[in-house]
Image (cartoon, rainbow, N blue to C red; front, side, top):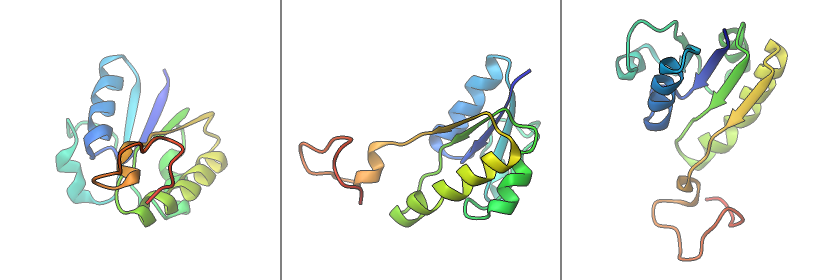
Length: 123
C-alpha cells in the first residue's frame, strides 16, 4: 500500500486531495500546521501529523514511512517560497521516493494582470 503525506492537507486543495486519494485506496497521512486544523480534515480518522512548513525536522518526522509527499501549501508569497526547500529536504532525508509540488495562479496575486501565465514573475 502506498502512503502519501499531504502538506497543507487542511486547505482547499489539500482537503480534496486527501479525500480522493483515500477513495482510491491510498494510505493518506495529512500533515497540518496546528491541532486546530484537524477539524478541517474530511475525517478525524486519519493518522495526521502536525508540522510547521518551515520546520525541516518536524517535516522529516512526519514524512517517515511515506512513499510520496504532495506539497499543497498556500499563503503569502514568503510562505509559498519559503516552505518549498524545507519540505523537499525533509522528504529526501526521510527517504520519500516522489515529491509532488502543487501550485495555483494565486502565486501571481489576487488579480493578476491580463496575459499572466506560468512564465510570469511571482508575487
